[in-house]
Image (cartoon, rainbow, N blue to C red; front, side):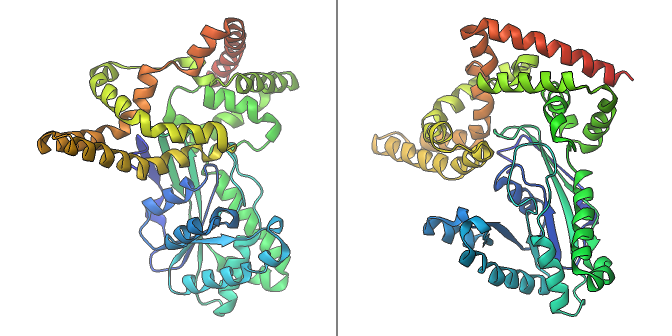
Length: 402
């Protein structure tokens, strides 16, 4: 994870309960990388609930089971499959009894939008079921988690993981025993509100394209995008300025950018190359030439096979774990068979490992951005987008100067 992301910020970890079972409830924007971030920044053994579809074919399912992932079945998987959830939830309860940790994505699916969606009641079933099973003696703690990415679909960016204050399940005992539905609803509402404080959150979905352009696409500082205190304060301040005309304009601009496969932040700020990039250009060149071949299967998968863009970063991450080492081994063996001195082979291996994280930056250094490609191929559309962005820049400055 440290190789894949340029910077990882962790906040609130000091408040995590000690020697108590924990039920983590993170937001879910970026496929299975979300679970990896929690696993990589906490110490207890974690068991992850993930959608059953990910366990097919069987060889993938066996691998996921081996890394503590367990399938959760949905109605679309068939009624008979949903019945299997009872066994899975019982496993979760046993793990919690042993003071282990369970992670549940309560939003039930992933989505790249920077907001908290409605929570399902599956995590409440585990929470109340565990306490009831052991006569409310577990002292189970629910920990809301907010995972914020400066950019979802690529590596080499910044991510911030925020751990919220633990919420004891016992807090809802009296309400739950009087009215189960009221207890479930109360827990869902509290956890949802806690999660909204830990992420860049736009409450009104209609406003989302506008807020995203202002505080994501036009923000040059990654740390401000992933800091919920800063982002949410700005979102709140924007409220009085919002009109239906602005919302429609933002939607049209977002659609235009998506249709032409261009990133608005690249048009707004360009590549952002620094003197450091030019100093590292020889290493960028080695990384680019060395990794461009094993990257092609990944590129093909993303462009032609996988339609859900939330999987882009995860596929790139897995390629770094499996494809790159395999490629380095093949090249090393080829050099050895060709009679190359072992010293040079070891130098190649060392450079390959050290410069692998530079590949993303190397691509940006040597290849034109989506903005540059659009400017060259469709200059009128590029100018149209640029002029529209200027109006949003003016609005952004007005809000910031209040």
